[in-house]
Image (cartoon, rainbow, N blue to C red; front, side, top):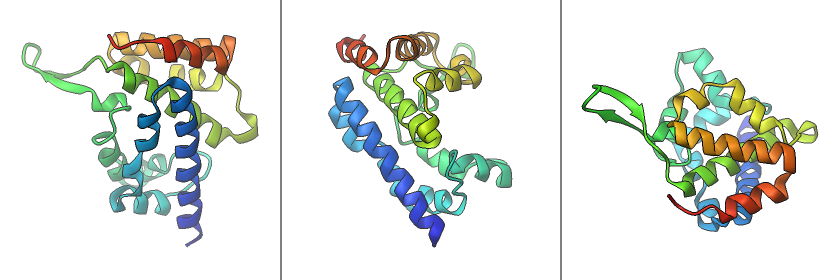
Length: 175
């Protein structure tokens, strides 16, 4: 029961931070609707079962089952995840990344910053979301233009701070 409450609190804390960031980025509606699928039984029950507190419970679920049922559900319903933006290319006969619409790249930025803040707590620094991005596979798995835009914003966050980064993000228009 304690993991149920802790997971619920973590989800709410994360969603609130994303909401605040989305408002600063000029995409308030994306913040209001961000990650609502986390309250679905498929995601919430697994999240509570594998709750860790310092990183996503889907990582532990993968260790146990070899995949994460909660993540599979989540990425297919939330367009701010680059994994959502893959499609079959008939020419190459393979799945390939698709360039994301700007509003979802903005939400992805807000999500990554909020997740870093929630999981790192008082140790959070503005360079942490960039370090996480560069340390994972996202940069090579995303469409190159999407990855370049996100990296640009994350570098601005690290070097110039939140105020400058959100000003730039807010002023960025759709392709």
